[in-house]
Image (cartoon, rainbow, N blue to C red; front, side, top):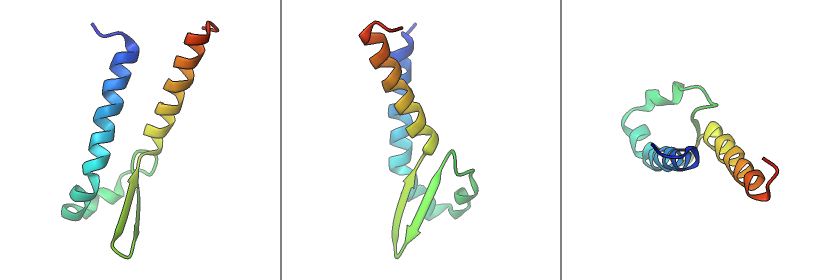
Length: 75
């Protein structure tokens, strides 16, 4: 079984790839904008679409902090 940090890294890469593909999917299925904002945030302006995931950002920051604390010997 993968160590937790490797699993988290793979999970973040998959979520990042999904967010990269999300603008194409949103053009085909505009109903995806009804997803809660904490999972998927969509900003549209004059043909520009910006999509991010606040929860992905939170998980990324927490995983980096966890890694830094483990590396420093605090945890």
